[in-house]
Length: 395
Image 1 (cartoon, rainbow, N blue to C red):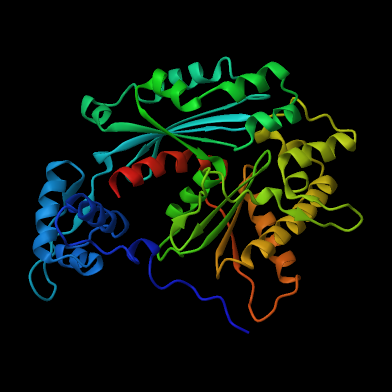
Image 2 (tube, rainbow, N blue to C red):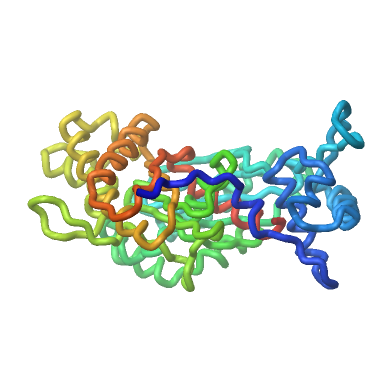
């Protein structure tokens, strides 16, 4: 049996060598800034070793980056062998971004710093996203969360990342939305709507992809090259990182893992969304005579009787284990991150149960992947939506 190996090198230090020939100054700047961002306090010599660039090239680039306000220099470190080293640090105010998630039954808006720290956050719940009002609401919230920024900070706020489910219009009827809303969402351009209301560059991402990226950044180094991410939200949001690259596909909606067919005892084959989701939990509770229509997502757990909760966790774990099993047959030794929009306690219980169910499935020549609970919960898609434009602009 081959054991799953733990990474020994952070994915952001692997395979990202600087390019030395003429005309690639910008690429080399991004290489150096990436090394600094993911290796806080590195010296000039360490940056050169990790990036593969000449020390003289690194020195020149660091001067430019410092002039742009993207890095700072810490106190000189003495007492080591060789010349005293100056630690290079990423300037937290060097760049900022807004992250927005339009979820099935919630809206999150975050202001993120260059250190991926949430500076401001607004959360609201809705029965369904109202296409008539939601973009005006987001525009007002962006103005609110940036109201106390200095002029310099506002000058560094350039990007807004928007995360949404890929099939929002097609599935709104499951939330009881009127046909008018479905038609409006089909004809809306969310990117242009938010550009007009915020004046920022807007990039749209699938909610699972954004959440996956946020969880990758949140992992303590060394970060693995391959990740499977599953977020149990109103439906299942999912993402995959392959060899350090977020797999978005041609449409940006790759890794729709919630649509994988699963098979539970005594039930016909069905997609995982219908078993391992908050929508499935609500349906289960309604069938048992409990009214949950007006219960917000964050309060749902408190309204779930213990037997129903245990039944849902068991079925969800079996479904997610089958999703992971099928996914990992084509992805080499991934780390599997299982998260929920529910409490941390429930997230840990579910991830542990998924691990048990996964180990019970047959395997040939390979041990199963490592399953860990996510760190960011339901805020991951909004955080990732802010991180991705920052990363692509600067790193």
